[in-house]
Picture 1 (tube, rainbow, N blue to C red):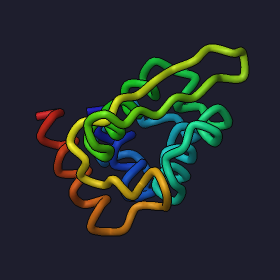
Picture 2: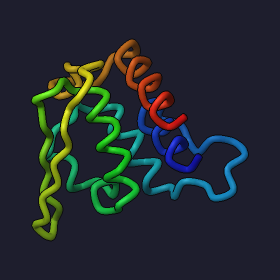
Picture 3: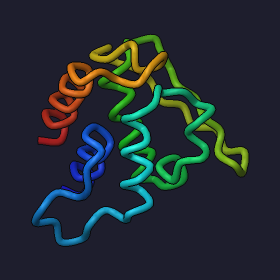
Picture 4: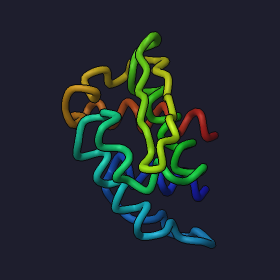
Length: 118
């Protein structure tokens, strides 16, 4: 449930889902909303707390897997020099690597994430 709240924040730019026992930390919500408003690219990810936490990296891995096509990878290096790579899979929003996702792209990725979290 907490992961779905963070995913919802990424794709909709909203806060935690109602009814959660532990809300998503505000800093992760801000970073999640920022991700939905920008293109997916490794250079901007180190500034986000999503990259710095295991939960955030899990969410990024799921988003990239749904959004980008197989054979595409996104690599980001944290401020401390640790590299993380996220592999594409389904290609439901391939343009997200070049521009912020459209409403239709966000809807496709949201559906993918909800199915995977079910």
